[in-house]
Length: 345
Figure: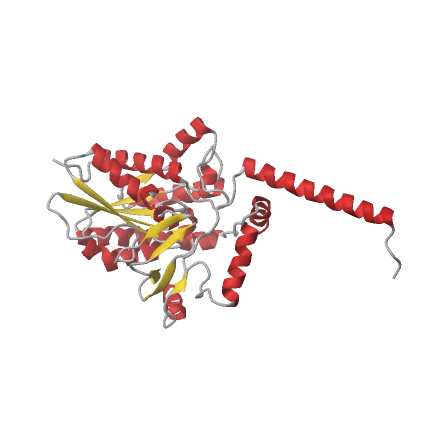
């Protein structure tokens, strides 16, 4: 094999150096424009099989959402333990997915946590408690199953059903339970026990996640929405209408007021998100037909965006950051008390 000439070696070195500088410049540019990816921290969230919800968080665990510690109580919900209901206590049960759970933010920065503080500040005669029933990746059917399973123990005065556009997709609860049954406790993010090769693969993935440029390319390549046919969507809205009816029935059985909370897609902020806007509008119409109060959380996010000129989301994640959760919770507290559903005498 002929030796590489000195001139060729110099060209290859120069080419490699130029490529490295270009990649470094691109990495810096992405970090300035979008932000730096957050590092995952062990332990991750653990789950176990649940016969009516498919899966649930393991009660009593401590895990992390990125660098923020998460405490899970004895009911398998994020937040402090829930004791006996006090005489002057009024409870709000907030159902939802990862946007209610608070992916990427601390325990005291989630929507439910901020909502509790806001209600207490605005209506101090009442001992307000807001229970965070948000679960990552839950859909509406799972949230209603949680309400039916735990509502009697929590005894809410108001139940908030957090709705996000991807709730139009639902998992097969029975099949999910069947797949998880007998496997014990698994890490939610990996669907395994993170041992051996699984742990090695996870660590390799985390190395890649440290690059903002890699994350941007990943999102551009794989984060594409699926097309929805009109026939599929018609079945979706029929199912959602039944869910809303069931929601009202379950709340009536508990003696609680039912309220739908519309959490917007971050792409809607600033006038975008045309497809998800249509989904939100359809859900709003269904709630109105069922005479269910609905609170939309887009307005405070628009005000925040107009002031800061940024979308308040966790970089390369899409969930709302602490500031986004704060303004949504403040707006929600104001609207709840304006509805006069549970205001103190």
